[in-house]
Image (cartoon, rainbow, N blue to C red; front, top):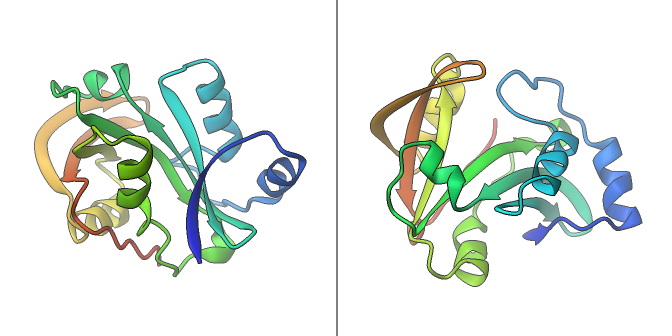
Length: 162
């Protein structure tokens, strides 16, 4: 059963993060990088995607300045950052719990915002076919042009990372 859990520095979590397999980190951050960013920014929260007791994915939720830095003006928006799935657990619908998690932990949030690199066509297709829409806003990021996508929280989210 897929479940989202806020990251905590337990021995079990640290061990699983050390064993996390992510070969292609061209367009995302590793869990270790996400954790470091969250430690230095209280508006960021690291979240583990768990299947039972197994870590299968990781991401960051960013409120406040995060969405604002991507051109968002609404305070009820959250930025989804650095979503990754351990290479051993691809082909699972790992993000389906995100709307429920947001409703429980961020009840005022109505919109999920994310940035996709212009060259990452796989991610663009994945998000666009699963309820995200292109805002037509563009920013220049660390790895080049970023497309800003959004979707309402209340919409079911069923991402299958193939």
